[in-house]
Image (cartoon, rainbow, N blue to C red; front, top):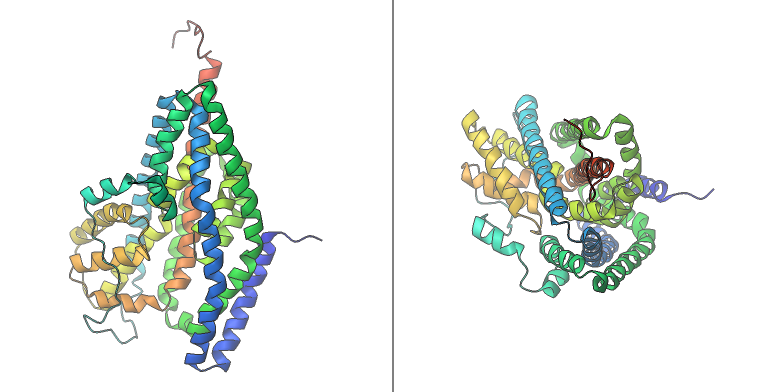
Length: 425
């Protein structure tokens, strides 16, 4: 019987844990670290292959999708507005849930670990948020530079302009739209070939992490990790429940089945990007039109990282608890609003969650060295938050698609473009 990709990823995940455990037991720390460094070559190559696909896929899918809308700029604005409003609501829910759970469960109180001294924290690239830098960074200086550096938001901005222009070209633009669709199909075929490497990349990533850290670290940080994963589970239930209210329970269940593979891929590689091409295909199978999926997903990958946002409040308060720092309700609400804004300006920043947390710790006089406490298990936590990011964007795309398709169906029933029946409302 032919096994699907999900089976091979799960098998690779299990074998990776076993191999990593054996390596950690048999080798000294330096030897395990060296083996792990070689294993990560496989994972790095796989992630580079994925990143090689994303930029041309986003560009071609958006140009084709928006080009098909033609001159209907109102539809584009409507989809964009609804998408951003949903993202803002989901962000507030994610941040608030993290804040409530970490205060209720208090995993950092009485932490039996030596606290690092202030000033001994890891060196992270500091990137403070400012409205000016954020807005100007949205617009690419060159589309080729944006493509070369995988600046998704900049590619989206250019693609919107290009798609609208192509749509207004009439018959002359049809060839460009057909070319964009052909490029998108080509990138999806390449994705199919790249995904054959995915189980090997998963095995290498998990083996390297467990060999370096050992399974014992999971016991030491059991309360913290358990609390966080409980929060992710609750967040997943909230997101699907909110989506089910709009699209219906049956459709929500079908959506969950369709995104199972990209969810697992994001979890096992600890990278949302690794799941992007398959994610786009899964949404199309579910029934989200490519013109909507190709618009919502790139924005979601920058603005709607629900799992990452919950982690920001959770980890920040956890570090404060570990140092015995009590924050007032006013301070915690201020922190929530600060994270709501700064997290949106961190798209494309390496280790963005840790950078945002480091900046937030400084604002509230919490030692940035506390980041050392979570670095040991950050990879294991990143697996969960990356997978949750996928779910959050899947629900957002399904909801926005449902709203837009329902509106189009109503307009078609009313005879859009012709004489509407004179029915009193």
